Each structure stands twice: as structure tokens, then as C-alpha cells.
Length: 236
Image 1 (cartoon, rainbow, N blue to C red):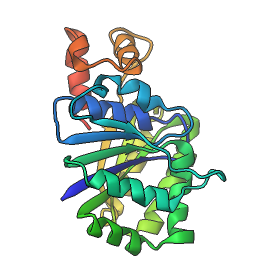
Image 2 (image 1 turned 120 degrees about the horizontal axis):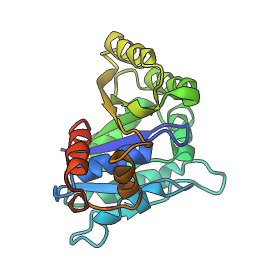
Image 3 (image 1 turned 30 degrees about the vertical axis):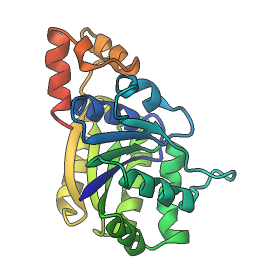
Image 4 (image 1 turned 90 degrees about the vertical axis):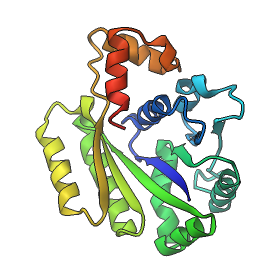
């Protein structure tokens, strides 16, 4: 059965594309993985996943989901999912931008029930998995509100994984709150993972973040950089 991972968060700049890049680096030599940039706003994944471009067979694509009203075109969404499901890959990672993520829950309030969405997955012989990214600081409230909204809609019908962008949390107690929430709602939240433990003021972290930004492959990392990046991608 194929697996589609939707990397989601309606708040911009919280680390969705960063998470996608780390997962892509982890799977750089895994020919059964495929990555899609669905972000209509900044196309960060298109830049950060340059190391996957030009592969034969291809392992990266950029697609659009929004109509002229900046709403998700549900027909286009399902057509794209169908086309992807026909490809000879096992796992698909979909980086949805803030606009797409914000519209994602409305699919189930205006167009489909979550059960119907799950039925579409079954017809594609696929599993749909939601990866919700949470950042700290001023983004924390918006991120957790989005998580609660999605969790209320899904109600255990789809698997939800919680990804906590560790470097954005000055107050580590908030990470404890999130892990406690996930434990109390383990019928809804499948896994909780921390990622992105980089200090952008020090080396080699600055060098690593620049290489991720530039879309460089693992081959470009050496010595301490390589030790650190391998440690981080093992988390995701």
C-alpha cells in the first residue's frame, strides 16, 4: 500500500519545508520515495530539494492546488493524487504551503466528510497520513489551534503525526505541553517527533542550514557537519 504524507500547518514560516528537506535528505538514496512541492506562495521545497532534480526516474515535482479564489480545487487535488498513485513509488511527501494548509480542513466541512476522504485513499490503495508541524514563540498559539482543528475533524480516521520544530522553542515547557497533549490523545495522535535542533548563530549549524537552503545533497556535508545532519535526519 502506498503512503501519502501531507506536511501541514496554516501558519507560515514554521518549518514545513524544512521538515520536508530533512526527510528528503534521509531518503536521498531511497528510490521508492517521491517529493512534491504544493506551496503556491514561496516554493521553498523547489529550492531546497534541488539535489533530487534531474534524477532518472524523477523523484520531485511541483504542483498547484488552488483555484482563482485561492481555495483548494478538490477535483485537481484528487486528480493529482490519482496521478501520483500510478507512479512506481511507495511513499509520497507533499509539502503544502500555508495557503494550502489553511484550506485543507475546509475540504471536510464544505466538500467531503473525513470518511469520504479516507474512502478515496482506499480506492487508490493508499494511506493518507497528516504530519502537523508545530513551532514555538509567537507561532505557538496559531500552530496549536490548527492542530486542534485538524484533530477535531479527523477524529482518528486518519493517522496524525506531530512534528515539533525544536529550535523555535525558547520555553521548553511548551514542548512538554505538546507531548502531554499527544499522550492524552493517543487515539488521534500517532507519533510525536522533535526535529530541527540547529543553532543558527554557531558553526557548523550555520553551514548546515545554508546547505539545506541551497538544496545540496548529503555528499556536500563533511566532518562535524555530517555527524550533526545525520543525527537530525535520523529523528524524522
